[in-house]
Length: 184
Image (tube, rainbow, N blue to C red; front, side, top):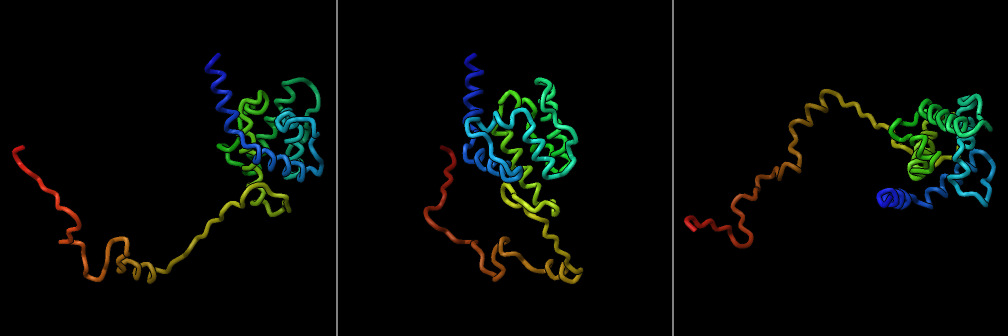
């Protein structure tokens, strides 16, 4: 029991109220409606319905049927459909939370991290006109060099390799020299 309490305390310590607030504001902006003020963030998104609605706003028709009733199995199915749609949208598998993280509220910090990953992925979809969540991902900056430029670069000694002006550090003695005394 003590171990379980320690694990729960460690998981709670990972939560960042500021990030949760940003994620909530982003969801509200995407859906165009506010969360109920008397409910906690994780309770509003727990059954997956809100998350499925968000996914349908980002990629219309990605989740054809959202379960609104039917007990815990149907609600967990919503979460699974959200996760599947998110991966198809381009969110990397490693960034996606486990169903129990949300349903059993085991790791809400991971759920928020996933929402930020989804928010960053929206930048890669030109059909989506905002709002966005998180920083814009960097893009590849590919450079093409001619054979002539590559050959010219081979003859240059980089300054990380030391000076190319003939001066070296050989023979410099700063401070006391190191003495090796044999036979002691």
